[in-house]
Length: 165
Image: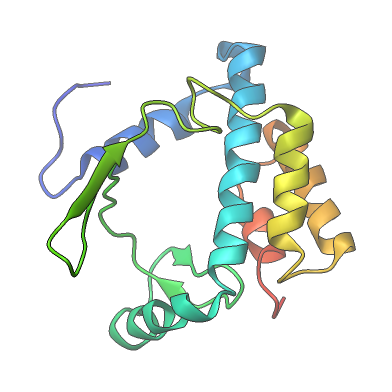
């Protein structure tokens, strides 16, 4: 693959093209296992995030301002375009008395430097997901993620994350 981007192509799209062209036999088993863990963790976080009341304004905003596209909003199933992602690892809180609190966490539990155990990951997934989906559906997601290398695409997993399948 060429390291340069095609006109209009994002780095994420270039990476996705590279990943889609990979054959599972070229990926080390421990990398596949870690990807399964990360996918399950991400799905659990999305499921609980879609359910908490304070996140509903974000959902309504996205639903009202974005439509169509290849991505789906977890829990609801609305189709939306892909967007840019930003991640922060440092926080500063300004208190009303003029003081501030700031700090960062170099390796939070669940990061690649401090990963969850398989048991912790499954517990977290079921704990987060149970506020949205029943145990049978959550088990189906776990089974699908564990056998993901046999799947042609992740569409079947995406459908399992909606409450309207």
